[in-house]
Image (cartoon, rainbow, N blue to C red; front, side, top):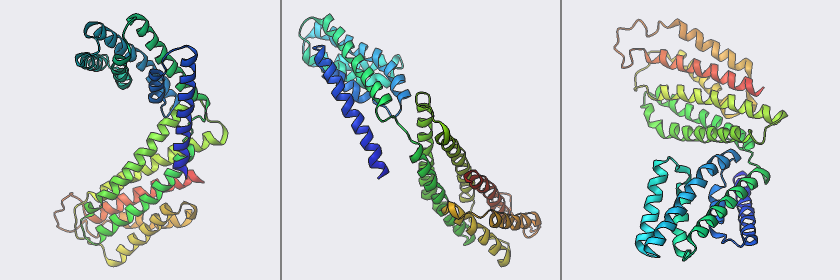
Length: 336
């Protein structure tokens, strides 16, 4: 349902921007097609993006229009005109680093070839005018009509990431304790990384949007909390990657001590999957048992064995788990 709402707001804003742009151009007796194209392309996820890229797209469109007028005057409506107008527009925009305006400028230069037959200078001025209308209308619509708000999606994504982190951790630890190759869980780590990156992008959007629509009160607090929680989950993923990249080795811990690790990991996984079921007392109790086990360190440290990583696998697993326990406590403490 959330996705349909987001798509719906974008579609509604696009429709409004198109209507207002075309209406203003009709009032000015300007052809609306170029303005409409600009309005559609300029409607960005945030107001900040719309303004920043709009500043780039205006000179880029002017370059495309200028090339179109020049080559129409030289070669008329011919294949060479389309080619030169498009290629030189792309090359010039690329050279001037107007990358955000390259598409609009190229479309403008090519589309103008078909409609300009005389009054080249006036046509050039009108194209700049229609581009300006499209930029201003799309930016205004983005700012005042259903302003972007990604807070709810960010919070939901973080819950999903937390649950997915628990599932990935369970698979990696099962592989390690069963002496299988943990690298087989790479798809799970990649999927988790994509979800975190997507959420980080939404946070970036919301941060940029706050320049024009500042969050206040509880919404601001929720957003700041979401940033902190996602950082904790990103660090947990880092430690999971360390576990996954361990080579398959034989654990020298006794069965009893392996069960301590399994119980602690099971609680950790449960808390990540079910945020509401977090128990601080149980969390610290299991963490304390892991710490005792880690500092004993004599189960495998005294063995005359060459390890691929240079360290006994049980100590590496204990270290990474303790790191995750600390991060998970921070994560849940932020919630409370």
